[in-house]
Image 1: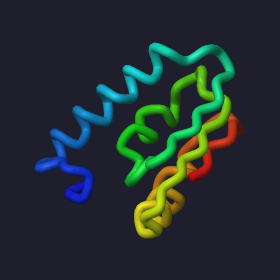
Image 2: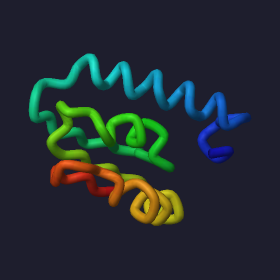
Image 3: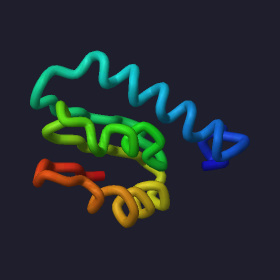
Length: 85
């Protein structure tokens, strides 16, 4: 959280929610989202349960972020759609 410029948990969640809403406004039904530079999943966590997202793929060059995302976010997707980081 602190590595992405969030001085507090509240700031981290508010910014993630704002990005999630911004992305959600542009999604078509059955959208495929490619998140380049997904980091620690700040935006991804707000797209997990969006009914328009059929597939989400997050990429980042910082391996510990990807490991954390895979461990804590990837399995939380309901409905059988593909959510991979």
